[in-house]
Length: 398
Image (cartoon, rainbow, N blue to C red; front, side, top):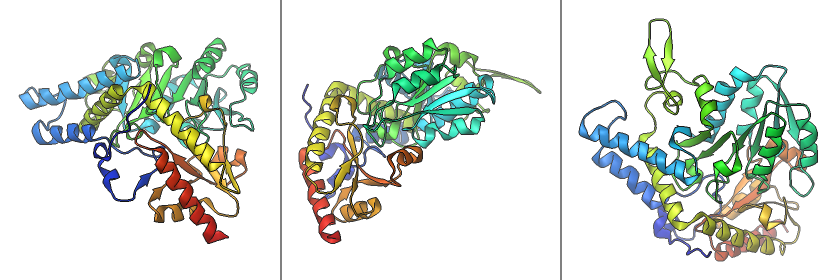
């Protein structure tokens, strides 16, 4: 399935002359329908949700809950199993605090992997339980034999990225879930890099919790998503207390609303949820199979061109079926921050640093890397601009 690359009019920032945006793994450009949907809320029916009985309050509530329906449909979840959060980080913290504190003790084990983002490491450290890491092989894949050996220790939870934000590795989530469940463990998936770039079916994957974020999915910042199995959400205590998440408040104790309301305390990011709903509508119309194929094509071309650059090493697998739409690399003799700064002068926007994945960078034996990540709007010409700019870097440091 081919994809017609959207024009810059779909992404207002890209109208800037000479700009090549290759940092979608950090944050995607917001698509125009999402901007327009948020503007309509602010300009025509701005009101608080779930409480008011006047017309525009009802309209705002309907739009917010319609966005939940759209987001649930986008990943083949259900509205009752779809919670809005601020971002994927908060979604994972919600699970660590609500489910984790009720079910995981100091002597219990949580398995994470060497390729996790800090958002899927630090919450489990704060939980105060035992941690073990599934190692990464030299070609950037998870060592599933080592995973099986760790499962023999009967962990309570496996926390794993669907797609690595450094290596681009697409992990076999359905297989991981099957193995973990056989060992009696639940599975939380960090889907921040996956949901915007490939088809995601949470029912088919079988994960107990699946977290992702709006700002990487061509939507706004300030809105994230947690999908959780209904029976788990019903059993979990709330993460935050306040308005809307209660059934009844007594003088000394309270009872809770049903999920997802139980986990949405206070005034939620109404405009942002509506914007995300519009973004996933746009992605659905584009077709996630086409989005994935486009990303695969651009990544294949990028790997081919990057291989032409003397002294450049790309991290991760060369198997395109197991790699997402990004390339993280090192250039001999040049610090990644210098690479990114010089590229930026030429209008080529990439990310440099440890990418909030310090355990993985230690595994790679590097303090940092430069990362180019590709989106629905990127073309082979954008990759050519990257290669030309890298030539300038080499000239400067020759």
